[in-house]
Length: 402
Image (cartoon, rainbow, N blue to C red):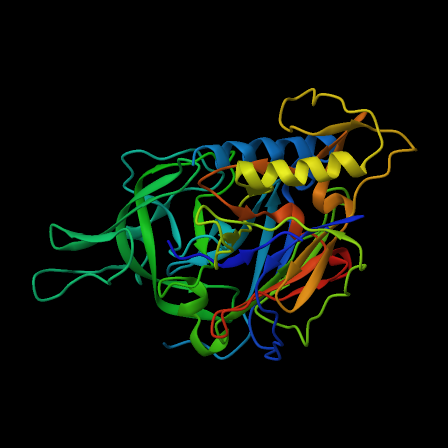
């Protein structure tokens, strides 16, 4: 699956977490906007901040370890937050029905569970009934009519099928289909290509029914939006502690920049297995909470934070993190900064550390196969994706005010 990637090189009594990629100006103000909600507080207002964070982190660690005819208006869509997942509400079919799908920058094809279903996971809403929609269609294939040349797509019994597997063991198998997709009551994408999953497995907590692909492949919804999106979009993720709504859009940012860090730094270069810095070595992923790094790289960051944090180390009571400190008023944590090619991205405390009761932990995880810059590190930043320029701009922003 196509993904948004950046090149990583960690930089030096500030710890600099250095992701090398280009920043860009994005001046196109057209596109879709959406509202973001924290799902756990949305559905269960009695959950504490600690419970919300721990639920998100447990899912993130589990995931890492498994290792052309468009109405010319700006579409809108609602998004609901389910801890480390962000659910976008779209409308599918004629007549349209509401669908909740994960907004995922790490995948391309949009899919939802459909009837008839041989194996489906539980979901809040009814399964999408293709026979009830007058605009639903399948994609025929054969020797002289191949399926689209996309990953995880093939021809079987004269029809194009999708068979997608994700790093967290989620999978979907079914028919590659066409349908009218709506962002709101006025904007629609006729003949949008999506996957109609009839054999699926996912741990979505009974909330949503699939994924909306925001990757850079030809099958992603951003590409299918065509001139309406300009192949650009952005989102702004609110921190876990304050409940409320946050906006996301396809792309409404101007020139983006970040303040430079101090001159004294602990430099930790991200050296790949080849012994040199490698391009495209980390995924910018909205679908996982934690930033996951290879063991040798994480170990250096862990040691640098340990050396710069003068506080007693304690074990994580939930055994999710490797480096934790006793939380008290005297605790002073290291400052961490992501240095993208073109500017620095200073992380706030909640971007790099999580506190649970008397314990504060470094919120990075280890994975040798799934290297990602997670949503926790992206909170309170306007994060943009420009598929044409191949850039990912970041701008510090109070997302609760968006």
